[in-house]
Image: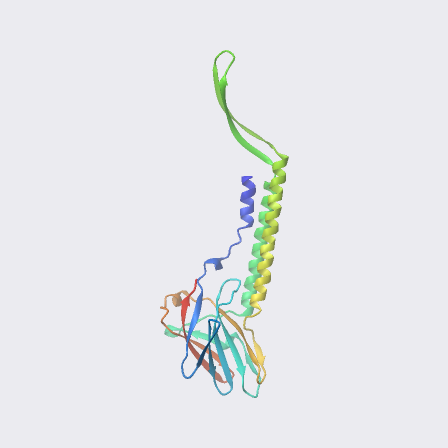
Amino acid sequence: MKKVILAIALSLGLTSQAESKAQYQIQIRPINGQVENWRNGIQYVDDAKSASTVRVVSIQDALPDKQSTFRVLVLNKSDKPITFGPESITIHYSGGESIKLYTYEELVGRLRRDIKRRQAVALLGAAFSAQAADGYTTGSFGYSGTTPYGGYVSGSGIYSGYDPALARQQQQAVQEQLVAVNGAIQARQLSGSQALNSLIRRSTAQPGGTVGGIVAYDPPSSFREIASSSLVTIIVRVGEEEHKIEASFSKIR
């Protein structure tokens, strides 16, 4: 039974580095007449210019690999279409350094590779589990006693053998665990794909139209050393206009 437990443990060895990843959330600092608002405990700030308005929302969305996030929405107030995408957003902090933002394609590719890795590990675990569920049991025993002639004897031995009831128990445990593992992989793939659909992708906003979505990033180690009171600048370029929003970042996990 120990072999089966070990094989099942292998099939469950699917944890991601994201489990221990630090996540950050922005606290926006309105400047130059920007309008700060709150809704259900969520902060957002609008920066309005003649041809566009940008809204930055301080909210943490759940992504498959637990990137830090916020949201950006753009309103096109001009009389011409405007194309907007993740390349239109940058985050600058001390010394002119910037934080890399992830594209939809990058995160979809990362999720696809992670699902394939999990499936491969699950298959390997299934192979070990099937091999280990052989119904054989081994153990040791000791004995002692007296002979009919008044003598004393003692000793020990090892036994092994096939137990059909144990084999059925092992095979049932393996099957149940494999169903659970495959279900977890499928759930991660579905929920991950749905979450990533909300990421900002290159889109064209017609006059009077809006575009936007989730902005995803992982702060570099140099950024993590910055005190929460230090400000960063989120720059959003919409057509010929440049919107600047100042914010601080706080660690949330």
